Length: 429
Image (tube, rainbow, N blue to C red; front, side):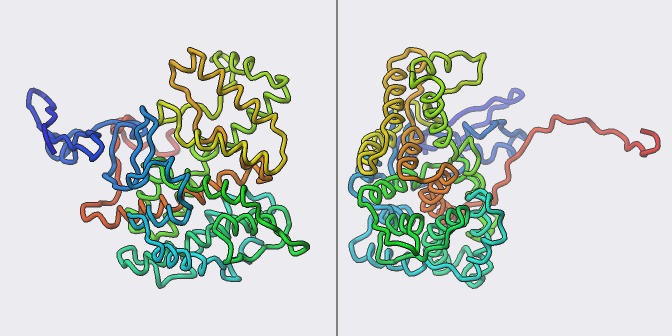
């Protein structure tokens, strides 16, 4: 810590330390503000509020930088795997080969669901959204493992994390299979995490399913790119619920529901809908759509551009742009949607309107195209987002509980309602 910030209230000066992070980020520590002054800060959406310190993820939105535990996302996507990234985020370091083998074996040994959990799916309507099933079944898992719910027992936390990472993929696949009336496919533990996920999604008892290595790698990269993203809505939910010492399954269930919101996890679905709208209703002319998007008098919006944090090109989007071409070549799919997407990107990056507003492509711009090419239905996109984000949620939850200064989350408010008034009996109203 160095330097201080001075706040003058009613002629009295108060000093608060300025905290500096390892990457030079600075923040005013106002943890004693209310005790000192009787005042609180008002910050709708917490956009200027740091709720915690963290060693997990660093983002520099102005320069388009994303790092997990210090490692650039570009190197992670090129050289790593999803389970290695999960180990990195949860354990705080890159594993040795033996450590990764042990971790991978542990995850794979927990992929099966209790048969009674499988029966739970029959209670849902066939048209139930997969995210509803995912959050419900995840919350119910705590009832099957009541002996490992202590958030302060390292061994119980470890086994719960491994169970969640493993079973999340199985639950996700089952939610899809149930919605289309297909039998559930048991996991195959000799496959990779991504390969097993594809197998459970697309295999049937009627014929053998061979995992395409291009699609397998694409899923692995997509999961890695979504693995953590600092204190976003769902991650903050994970921490907030966990701060009450709610069990880890309840915390994950809450985080899934937060991610379900269209303003958070549903953006890639909106991108696909926009691209098909341009193809079908604008004859594939992205330039016309962009002109309409500038007009605030209509409801047309450019989806997949801009980000709450990034004021530069989202580094994850750069990675996915190349991978989108590889996936389309592998599946032999139509490239018309990709061509429209690339046209939109090229025009938007040269248009003063979008450049001045720093509306660059984000991770959702290309991820939806990849999922679509693979045959994954739109309502499963957010489920895949949840799968990828799981290591980040778990590591953030664990980091909170490991902090001796952590407290239950309890935001303040400024009341703007009616002043004191007398109760009026119902017969006199």
